[in-house]
Length: 111
Image (cartoon, rainbow, N blue to C red; front, side, top):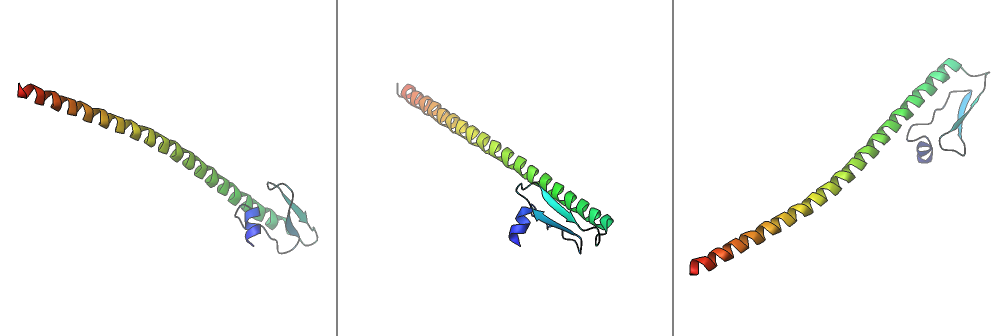
């Protein structure tokens, strides 16, 4: 059952009571349908297929949004790391300047 869910992008495969069945094909983007006109209520089947398509579209939207968030987080992390290293350099330079000022002040106060 888990393999069929992954084939349909996590959505439950559409199963008809009678007359319509799905079967996987070579491309994961395609689903072939076989309709038996003797047992099929086509309006119900079409409505069911439309709801499946809507679910899959919503899933694709969520997947794209997750990918966008992941990319933005990656960029943000790089920026934080770069700014953090710049901050460390600034703190070290400030400490050296303070040390130098205190050193000069102590030399001047001894005279």
